[in-house]
Length: 213
Figure 1 (cartoon, rainbow, N blue to C red):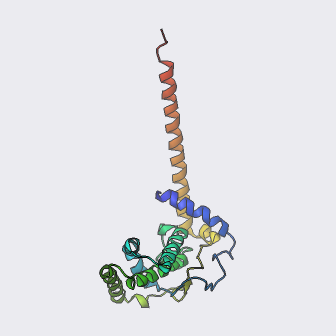
Figure 2: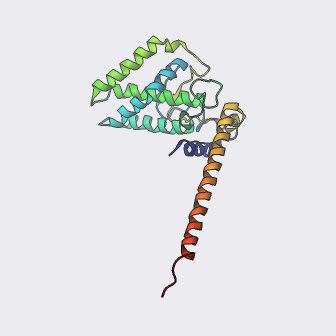
């Protein structure tokens, strides 16, 4: 799925979240899932940089267990509602409607890495990645770089969904959505013109076809 299609799909699924109260998929403080400690703004930056490597380790993990699969499913769902991180400011701007859900995604990513570290299998690669993440966080004083969501814990039973109203009133998000809509319209127009050209060629070929003798 290309970037445009992904963003359009995310916007469509945000539509049910239009009321301001529909910010979470369940009441705040849900405890029926796995508890995810908060991550600071600085820790998010480091975790985001290592996200592909952490997900690759999880995909290669054998054997798996229910908590690991629950964390993977949560990360995938949160990543979708965060529009895959394609909206500028999702990671860096605490005023972005997508910042809180990005916090939730990366809280799940850190929990997944810590869980993988203690699972059987190829522990050397997992320990090496966990150490690399820890060292990078220390080098950048990641725990000291805070934002308003830095002390918010999460739970895998509680999916964070951006407010549609906030998305539509945020200048950056609105510009992205308008750009996506324009690209979609141009792609649709190009596809329609190509289809019409093919039909004209097909009609022309039939008109010039020799008559049967």
